[in-house]
Structure formats: C-alpha cells, structure tokens
Image (cartoon, rainbow, N blue to C red; front, side, top):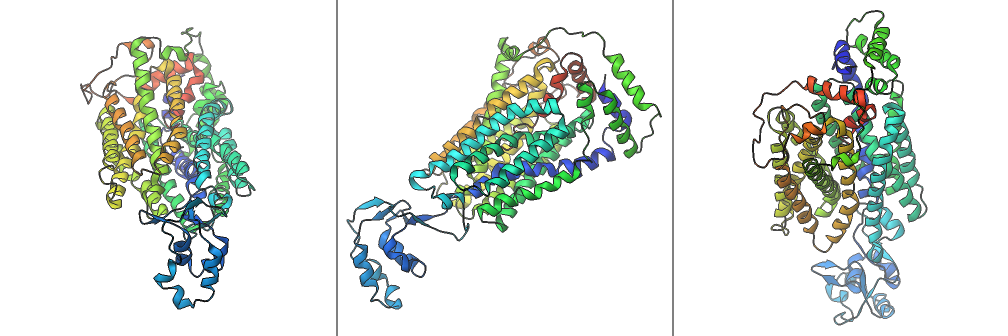
Length: 587
C-alpha cells in the first residue's frame, strides 16, 4: 500500500506532527548529546604534580614554593610526572626557622640548588589543580602519568559499546517498534549513567560507561526515525536539519550544565536524572504508523492516522479505519519479487563495489573526524568548557546554510566543499600551532565543515544505494564508520606530545574523503535507483555535472516508489532506510 498517499489524506505535516516533533522528539536528542560527551568532563585530567610528604604543611599556603623546591620545570611548565631526588628533611628543618616574608623571597625557593639533581617518577601520589574541577574520575583514582592511558581506554571502550549498540539495537528497533525501543534504551542509559556516579572503583565505572555507550547511537536514531516516518517525503530534509540543530543545542546545553556542576559524581547525575522527564510523554508519543503497516498491523496504524487527521483539522469518513485496512489487504497480492538480496549484493559488481567502498570510506572519515574534533576541544588550551561550548555553537550556522542549499545545489558539491574546507582548516593548524587564538578559529572552521558533511552524506548515500539494498548498504557503511570513535581517542592520546598531530590526521582524512566524493554521481533531481540493474546504469563520475542538469523530480513520487518496493518485497528494510540517515550522528 502507498502509505505516503494515505498520509497526505490526513495531513503529511500538520499540527499533529509539529507538536510531536517539537514537544517530544527534539528534546529526545538531549540524552545522546549529554551522554556521548559528558565523559570528557567526568574524566577530565587537571594539571598535577608530585606529592612530597615532607612538604605537605606548606602546600596550602606556599604552593609555588613547594613546587619550586620539588618539581623541575620544562619549557616554562612544571613537569607533571617527575620530582627531584633531594633531602627534603633538611629542607623542612631550614623552612621551620623562616618567617613568612622570607619564605616568599625567591632566594629561599632554591635551597640546595636542584641543578644536577636526579629525577625520579612520583613516589607518593599527586597534588591536583582543583580550580576548575573539584574532583574527576582521574583525581579519584589517580589516572595520570603511567596510568593516563586508562582515560583513553575508557573512550575506546565507550566507542566499542557504540559499535555493538549500533548493530544490536537496530534489530531491536525493528522488532519492538520505535516507541517502546526508545524508552527501553532511554531507561537503560539513564540507569547506567546514574549508577556510575556511585562506582567505587575504575573497573566498575568503566563497565557502566560501556553500557551507556551501547545505547547512544540507538537513543538518537529512534526519535529521528519516528519523526521522518510521520511526515511526507518533502519534509524529511526538514526533519534531518532540525534534528541536527536539536543535537547541537544539546551540546551547548551540556556545556552549561558542566559550567554549573563540576564534581564528576554530581555531573553524572545531572546529565541523567533530569532526562526522566521524557517519560512524561510516554502516553503522548505514538508508535510509527508506517512501521505498524510494515509489520502487518494496519488497524493500529489506522487508529493513529485517524487521531492525526483530527488534530490536523481534516475530516475523514466515519469508516476510515476499515477503509485503510481494506486498502492494506488489497495491496498484499502475490510477492512480485521473489528475489532476496543480501549484503554480498553490495560487492557483486565492480560499479556497486566501488560505490559501496567510496561511501563507506567517506562515512568513516566523517564519523572519525566529528567525534575526534568533539573530543579534542578540551585540548585546545584555555577554558575547556568554553572551547566545548564554541564547538557546539559553530555547528548551528552551517544548518541554516544547508537548509536551502540541499534543495538548490548538488549533494556532491556541498559534501566535497564541506569536507575540503574542514580538512584544510585542520591541516593549517600545523602552521599556527604557537598561536592559540588562530588555532581556535581554525578548529571552529573545521568543526563547521564536518558538521555540514555529516548532514549531507547520509542523504547522498540513500540516493545512491538502490532500493533493494538501501537499508543494508546504509547500515553496513554506518557500522564500519563506528570503528572511527574507537580509533580516534588513541590518535588524540598520541597528540599529547604534539598538539596538532590529531588535527593533521583528521584534516587529511577529510581532504581524502572530499576528493573521493567527486567520484560519486550527483543525485539531486534524479530518480532513486530501484534495482541493482538501475544502479549499474549510473556510473561513477569525476568533476562532471556538479549540479544536476535535469529538472528535479517530485520527492513524493521518488519516495513512494521506494516504499512500494520495500513493502512488497523487503518490509524489514523499511525502518532501516529511515534509521540509517542519522544512525551515526555524534557518538
């Protein structure tokens, strides 16, 4: 049955859809934004230096004196993991007979000059600069120096959870439906993050963060899928843009929460417990009528459509529910396509293989760089919270530009320009590594570029993959791309010795992806390929026809064709087509 035609009869974008999207689905982007990046602050590493037990009585009032006596200086900064080997007992006896005024004099700081003194790793723990964060996971369990890799390991484990969750919860969403699966993910995510606030050791905290990572991709995909399945095809770009705007606003709001709540245990609760308010919409949020049709529950779908029509101010016939059921049953004729398709069809022909590989590589680059730049914000120096706030704010203007751009310019040209702009900005940081202000500007340009590319790529990919394998293709590319959030923390960890190294690597990935995008065909205004044979008639291209020459076809007819195909031969792919358009957004 042509669901889009039925949807038009009850209002494809009326008051009902606007209420559900604005009041329920947009706030539902907050859990993903909060839990994907709150770990950057929960496990923040403040400045630290070796603790010297003999000098403890002077630490609070004469911090600089103690540091000069025990800590070497390298490149105008105190070393964080080494200390001098000195007779601190003799120094203490000397200090006990000094007045406060004498202790403040420079000449006292170098008692028994440390020149030539041997250095050893910290022996008695560390002191931490608590001016920005009173406590973090790092200060709680001393995850510094030879244990600093554990902070990176936590991000890697979080990324592995996202990869598995992306795969597993996608199937659960198809089996359970959009509404129950969203609330199941949400409850699991809130409970796991809140429970991590009471972890008594690092291993327990790490396990709970893995559970949170499992739910992050699904918690973002479910409300978005429900949104685009409730509106007509002509409004799906709108839903995509608005969903991205809501996510970016979530990042900005997270910066505000961190500014107010600095203790890591309270922060874990602050980004979790308020989200329980989303359960107040449990009886308001409907199930996707499109999904109900796909799983042979037309009567339930018709009831939701009837409510939709009433709220939208559209009068329907009294026996509307029965008529929808009859139309559904009459459309269930003999299966016209007995051919089943699998993931191997993505690689069966040379043309299809090349398209799949190019899309997947670009998707991997986009996911890696978006997550990498978000993780990198605190490393820029200065106020970490302010940097993260800017990283979220700079995304918003890109969506305003993309809104008309996706309708009037080619997908391929926007994708290429976005990736090249972001990539060049990241690579250029190697020239201005000594100027933090220029570094911050270039970083923001890079973040704007990757944010734009993140919106365009799923749309372009969905229009390149043929209908019979579109769900499989989108899912395959997005799952492979989730390897990026596993690898990128390791690259950022390598950048501790060379600040611009991660930006150079991420910039190179973007530039390479931007060049690869030129080989993809332009899809704006083109009919969607339905079969593998249709896809074979669309060759790869390079630097040709950056914008489509043909007149744009109706989005309604394109989506109608694809939906008919899915309903008739592959109903289980229906949700995957919608879900995959945003499934990898901001892990």
